[in-house]
Image 1 (cartoon, rainbow, N blue to C red):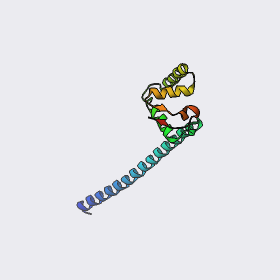
Image 2: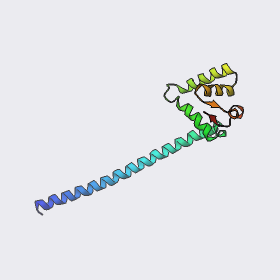
Image 3: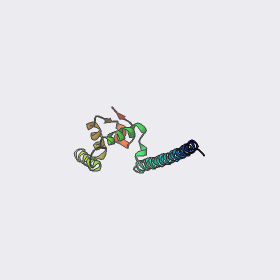
Image 4: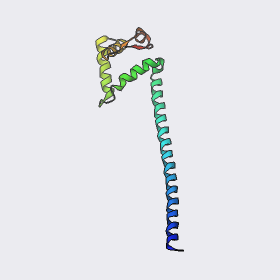
Length: 127
């Protein structure tokens, strides 16, 4: 075998190894994407289950969209639970009931609630 033939054979083996490595990489990336999708879907299911268990499923989609939009405002706060708890406690103390506290919070955030929301937890938020 000549020097040129050996070099060509080595180049061919390296190309085959590179193709095998590319295939292995593609398979590993596909597995990783699938695991990420499964993790994301499980979390979304848990979040939906938490909302359902908390009784939020009685509200229609526009109401939930408005509420989640308001909750998103708390996203960057260091302790959003205590901030929301404090806001609700202050509103209940000031207004006397949780229903009017919710209306008060909505009004202070630039939103107003419909009378249906105040009465029985259903209805739409009006801008």
